[in-house]
Length: 599
Image (tube, rainbow, N blue to C red; front, side, top):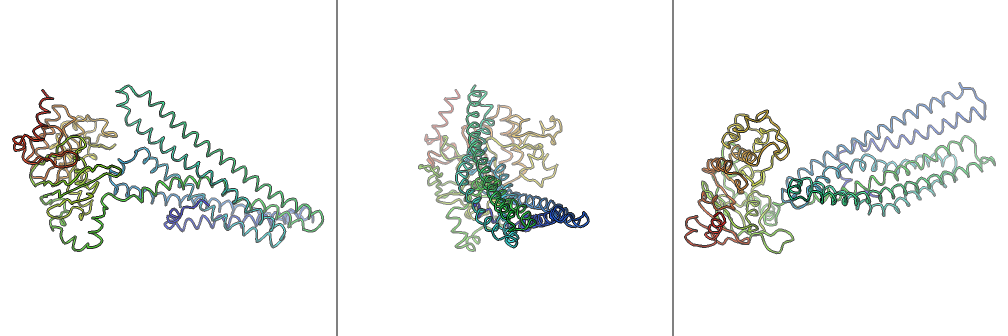
């Protein structure tokens, strides 16, 4: 009957409202019984016994009161179902958001952002009909018809038997059609996810497509993906309409069978008029919950199809939960924590940060699905007050090493030590309080300039934000914005140039004031003027901190005290820049190659 057990567990948080929705439906059916009895009694009194209005007024009033109460119960049932769905969707959104943040950017980067956005929006909304309509109706259908059947059996056992025999035909055909509809609904959901992912990818890449003159070709691709979704949707609707027709026909034919046998027996005087009329009125009410369940069956299938993807996200293993970390925490958590230096355990204060010494010790990492490891037996140190440059060609493993320090991924072998303690033993959130990251392309959100800077430390005051902005040379252009620091920047910092966006990210690092600084070639995409301003600010920011500089240009490496050269995931050379130049190894070759290219 299209029920997902994991979704049923979510009902625990809204059990009261769900019970109210089901109880309202059952009491509404009881009101229908009262209506049928009172109406048949009033009609029989007027047309058979020629009773005056005063004689049947009580039954008419009872009919009207039952109708009003039934309307109120139906409204209460719908409102309770809506509260159930809203409560579960809110809880599910919270859990999904928390889970995605815990999974880190590696998980989001592993798929298409449009598909993920569709799952978190349309996917969660698809559960609305499932919890608000389908599940309550499923419970009502399992209970309510028995109320009517018991009443009918009291007055006429033959009609009750006919209803009992014909009723299972409706759920039987519902399940028979549902197996086909389920496959089509899954296909429709996959088509919608692909369309959302493709459309968002095209929108995000529109500037590049326009520059390359390929925008018109992408319109054809969007049309093809949209047409595939249209066809999948029409197939689902075709099955839904056909199944609705079949269920309505079965319910109508079943009612007709009861009506025929009642009419024949009424002509031969084997059943009273009032009883026959009451049963005839109750017959559509008996099949009504089954017909309603059939109409809501497809809404339930869409919810189950969407839930499958939601469960995949919730069940995805978090990056930091590798086997070694789990072994240390579960098997010997006390001794593991005892190995942590007290300076790190007490570093939660914003006013105090210990100097950090980090050591990569025989670190290895392989991405899923790739045969060649990204890092293999990598060892080097990051010392307080020094800039360590990590250089190498694209794919050498530089970004992978940075992701490990950010706790986005965890080593498959070896370990990273922080002041002698295993980094894996530190809670990721607490560790990231000690890290400031300046990526090559920082992300600015649709908020004010002040809000974007304060992202590094939300509790910062306006004076602290301005101090950080001055240090990063943001104040120079902030005063020229329409509302100053209160100016909305737009998604991805639409109002700012690349150099200005980089300075905002630099202001975040100044505001955070963390002891570990990770710089991913922060000046590579800047013009000469912006690069000079950002470079000067970076020199001040790196003073006294442990700094990892991911470098692609040799001019950036000149500021480093120590250079680590990576090739194919391995350390091939490391030392002071001057020493490496004298050795005439890979580093010297890179410097010479870039000098030749610049000439």
